[in-house]
Amino acid sequence: MSYSAPIPGLRNILYLDLTEQSSKVVDRRELYKICLGGVGLATTLMLEEYKEGTGALDPEMPVILSTGPLTGVYPTCTKVAAIFRSPLNGELGEAYAGGHLGMSMRYAGYETIVLKGASKYPVYVAIHDDEVTFKDASSIWGLSSAIDVGKILRSREKGAGRRSILRIGRAGEKGIRYASVNVDTYRHFGRLGLGAVFGAKKLKALVISGNKEIQSPEHKNYRKLYRDLYKTLVKTELMEKYHNLGTSENILSLNELRGLPTRNLQAGSFEGVETISGEHFAENYLIRRVSCAGCPIGCIHVAMLKKAFSKSHEYETFNVSYDFELIYALGSNLGISDPKAVLELIDACEKAGLDIISTGVILAWATEMQHKKRLSTAETLGLELAWGNVEPYLQAIELIVRAPNEFYAALGKGVGYASCKYGGEAFAIQLGGLEIPGYHTGLGNLIGLAMGARHSHLDNAGYSADQKAFRKGLSDEEIIDLLIKEEELRCMLNSLTICLFARGVYTPEIVSKALATLGIQKSPEQLIELGKKVSQKKYLLKKKFGYTLETLTLPNRFFETAATTGKLDQKRVQKALELYRQKRGLERSEKR
Ligand code: SF4
Image 1 (tube, rainbow, N blue to C red):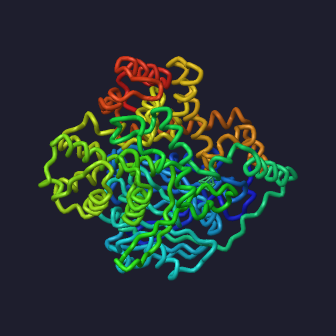
Image 2: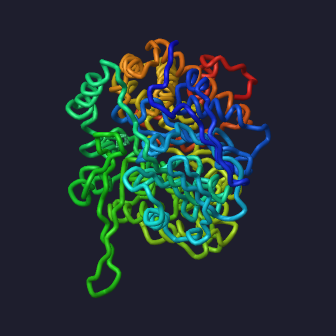
Image 3: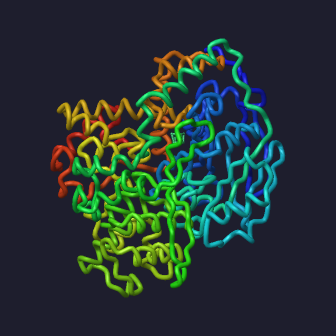
């Protein structure tokens, strides 16, 4: 493979040591040759850096943020991969965020950042080109809203327009195991608790900006390929859904297919769905759409939430972004049909810096526990959680962050932990210790979440395999083959940090052509092989973190409530898990 670095100053890694408050830049171009970037590079680096036995919240545990070679060069190549050890389930922590981050890292001249160590007091790190400063963050530590932290840092730090701001809320400071990192406006490293890792490092925020140019490749095919891609992205039906209603378009269709978890997955469809549909939000609350830097789609849907603050008709307004997962987690899964209530709950999580899917699932489990009289108001500190009732949920979110008693402290450790301590494991809807996303479509979804590297629907889109099975009648083996193929393909796309919404546009053939304009020669077959290798590396890392297949539990709830493709049968699922294991070439007793 021939390879050259067409963008001067890149192919390097910025190492930040929070203990020593020092930084260094290391040229690792040999690593980029093998891994390209994104998740491939970050996983390889983590394998290099990880010292056996290091816990997710230990100071020595690194966090790796990595862009890809196409960032800022082609449209929708906007994401940054974060690799860490998850404090929620102890496994592979993997999350992606867009916004300005990828672009700002490249403006500053860094493709990858490795964060190590922990500060003794709250700090934030300001990176402006080659200038890296560790600053006291005591005055912004403990602020009630992560949104306000962003506003303050915007006024304090230079680089407007070429800057990205990552910060945690109180949830991250307090070590809530599913705390997120807010990125710019409306973007997050949401899942698996990166916010708690930042909190343990006493890292309140990271600001990055730069003045370097991202030069267009000189290659004769570059402009044509860019134009073609842009045209496909904005002028064909492929991406229209994401701009129009966004992912919340799926609310009605999933509901129709009986695949929308409702009231802690006691049902797969919700009678109040109309008023929390994407259509209803668009008609009544949508005020604008925004895009990540370098994307022409604008899939981020922002609603206006108006709240009264006095009896004499005085109001304040908030901008709140919404999408399918958020509406499921804080809408149907909590029995909430009032769209305003959903927006209020999203806003509360956003300010606290909580992963919304996990929060919704935990509140749903606690509600069912209370309904079944397995929790008393002594534990909930007087709160009566009830489906559809927003006020107690808002209070519960605040109590999870404050953790005033053992019960709320347990809720802050995830539904797996809380149900182990208080019971109700059969209806704690988690797989691999991660609270589930908004799909109950069938075998593909269940196996996909159980076996996917990070237990996310984004690993392999099991819900999509189920929808194919629903329409075309696939065998279980065909479903498993689809899952494995999709996971490997996504590992390739994620090594190039291409937004997965554009996966239909960036086929291996197109990616190969795009890389060629940068002087990177990779055939479509080599790219597919690269995805496979990255997927294997992620499993190797999981294994090093101590993950074993034996720890996997499948709560009964998944078998009680009929899915899109019908009721799931325990024996069939076990057989499919076994088949998946064999196809991945794992020994029966092998720990993954
Ligand atoms: S499609 Fe949406 S998430 Fe993806 S890059 Fe564009 S704006 Fe960001």
